[in-house]
Each structure stands twice: as structure tokens, then as C-alpha cells.
Length: 455
Ligand code: SAH
Ligand code: SF4
Ligand code: F3S
Image 1 (tube, rainbow, N blue to C red):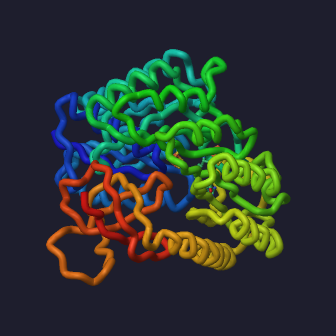
Image 2 (tube, helix red, strand yellow; image 1 turned 135 degrees about the vertical axis):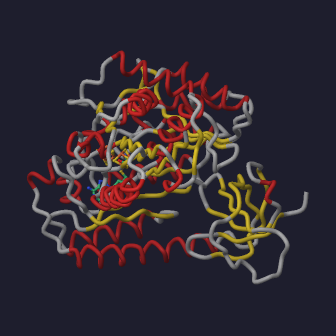
Image 3 (cartoon, protein in one colour; image 1 turned 90 degrees about the vertical axis):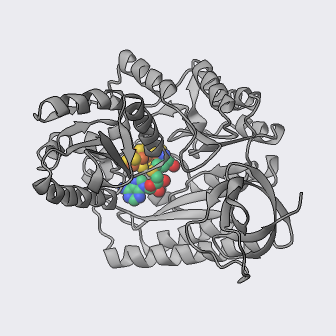
């Protein structure tokens, strides 16, 4: 039987899809690249913005059409949107199975049952806030049994260090669909990374919605970084995402002390206006945020910092928006992800704060903020010209980047620096998964271009 998996959403979902794919392969299924030739279609969904949900619905529409000629196709929807909409999704004509994000260890069984018998099935938490001890253990076993390097990122793996989120930012659906924060035991994380290293993994990215608040029975994230650093074979360690509240500065000392920890910090601010930050329930002021990144730069001088912003949150005036521009200018991020506010049903903001900024204004603010960031990224990138950087090569670049206009027999490779800068250069494909030195010759706001240095 052939299985096709489509994934939407964040790194957490990509990791879950990787685990699910491995569990299906081990159960004897074969992975397929297109829904058209698959017997089973698995869709890992995201609810963070309405747009993410719309994409799922349009894929389901496409599959409904396919099912007219091939009614035997089995469709399982899992992940965050499955948890949010539950039986509403099960009533969709294309859907056979709905499965919440913490029930993914059950997916193989659910699909096997659906093959034998066509009745619809669903498993999800009615209240995900009651994650039971047994469920947590089941998940942990699943996590460690089916982990592997990323298929499309040789020598790299993602490792979850914690589940869920307790912050309840007023706009955000994540705590409702992913449940409360639960940190995984450090010994399990360490042995998992050790095993990944033994299979040739060189870079691990530790994942959590608020990874800096990792804490297992008093064992902190900074302590975890020291332990992961000791693992032979692992050369680079990255982690995402950090939350700018009660930031344990020992994390910065760990970054300064430990050469394997990449000097990269993704620390979303969301807004530069204290009034908006308060309405978002973020729990810090703009000054407090700036203090954290200033400390980061003092302790780890060459650290590169990335951020997220939401524009057009309910009540965001032109003056509030100007404060986000000012924050971007002060923070001098390496790059920023900017999102138009999308009200999520069931969140506090959706309930209490009218979505009163017109879409046109959201779009305008989005473009303007991107422009401000682009100018900064472009300036920061230019500083690299003439310098040699070490990259971990990911593979061939999907887009044809016209780096130098030269004719070449080599494909364009794409790699990333420890600071998460994207580097494009010519070289043989078999370098994917290797570290290399690249001399930067040219830059754009998003990319560094260069040449492999000899040796
Ligand atoms: N846990 C991470 C991010 C999770 S969601 C953190 O707190 O930093 C990723 C990003 O999506 C957020 O940083 C935020 O910028 C954006 N986001 C979340 N909910 C949103 C919503 N309702 N509308 C628009 N953007 C949203
Ligand atoms: Fe959402 Fe806030 Fe938690 Fe991030 S910290 S996942 S934005 S609730
Ligand atoms: Fe990630 Fe989307 Fe869920 S951002 S945690 S997949 S709602």
C-alpha cells in the first residue's frame, strides 16, 4: 500500500510527519510522492492562521474529486487543525480518520482498521489540557522509536525537547491544540541524540514552542545544552523558538562557552508597542525585550538574531505600528517573519478584541515592515563580502539562483551557516550533508552567494 504525506505548519509538524512516515514504512507501507497514485493520504495540518486551514480544505476538495473514481482511498487528517475541528472534519466527505497531534502513535493502527472496514474513526483529546502520564510515555516511545535524520536535509535531525505551550498569547491557537508544556526527560533526549549521531547526524535542532523554558525536575535548558554538547559526532546544535520572558541568561553563557552551540537566536517580539504587547498577553515590554537581545549580544558578540512580528492585531493604531518599525530598526535582526493577524476561534483575542484592522491595512503594514527588514538584512549581508564562512550543505538549491552568471558544470548548492544565513554556491551534489568553507562574493537581502574554497 502506498502512502502520501502532506505537511503544513511549523517544524514541530515536520518532525511529526517524519515520525509518522517512519512508522508507516516500518509497518510495511511504501511512501509515495503524489496523492494521485497513493492508496492512503495523510494530511498533517496547522491551525495557526486561517490561510493554513484553507490550504488543507482545498487539498481535501481535490481528494474528494479523486475519490469519485477511486472511493477506496483512505484519508487521515492529523495535527493541529484535526485537534481544533475534530468531528467537523470527520464529517467532510473525503475524510476517513481524524487524529489529534498527541495521538499520532495510533495512526498506523487507525489506517489498518480503515482498510478492513470503512467506518469513519477519530481519536483526539476532548480536553488536550489533560495530557495523561500514559499518553506522554506513549508519545516518548514513539519519538525515540521512529526518529531519523531528515530525508531532505542530510546529516540533520530535529529533536523535540518539550511538548505544548503554557503562554496563551491572546491570538494564538497553539496551547489549545498542542496542550500544556511538558518537558521530556534529559536522559531520553541525550540517548536519542547519541543514536542519531551514530547514524551520521551532525546537526541537531532542539525544538520547543518556548524552548528556553525547558525544565525537567529542575534540570534547565542551559544544562541540557552542556549535556548535548558532549555528544561525539554532533558538531552543530541549534534550537528554536525562544520566548522573551524570564529568559535564563545562563543560556547565553552556554552559547559563549560551547563551540558546538550555533550563535543563532530566534526570539519573536510580535510587536514594538507596549499597548499591543499587553493586549497580546506577551508578558514583557518593548524595553525588556530589547534588554534581552542586548544582553545576548554582549555575552555572545557575533550572535545572529531573528524575529517574528504580527501586523494588524486588533486595535493596532498607526502609532503602534510605527513602534514595530522602530523595534525592527533597533533590533537589527538577521531576518524577520511577518504575519498578518488572523483571528483564531476560541482564543481570547478572538473573543475579546475586535479584528478591526482592514485587510488592506494589514497588507500595507506587512509590506512596509518587510521593506524595513529587507534593508537591514541587505546591509548585514553585505558585511560578508570577501569573508569565508563555514556552512553545512543541505543539497541542491531549488530555485536557480543566478549567482555569478558563469557557465558551470556543477549544480547550485545551498547551505546554512551556524548563524542561519543561507549560502548558495556551485559544487558537486555529493557534498550534501558535509561542512564546507565558502568565500562570499555577492549578496542579496535573503542570500549570500559564494565559491567553495579549495581544500
Ligand atoms: N512558539 C513560538 C511561535 C509559534 S507560532 C513563539 O511563541 O515564538 C509562529 C508565529 O506565528 C508566531 O511567532 C506569530 O508571529 C505567528 N502567529 C501565531 N498566531 C497568529 C495569528 N493568530 N495570526 C497571525 N500570526 C500568528
Ligand atoms: Fe503561541 Fe505564544 Fe505559545 Fe508561541 S508562546 S506558541 S505565540 S501561545
Ligand atoms: Fe505548528 Fe501550526 Fe500547530 S504552527 S504547532 S502546526 S498550529
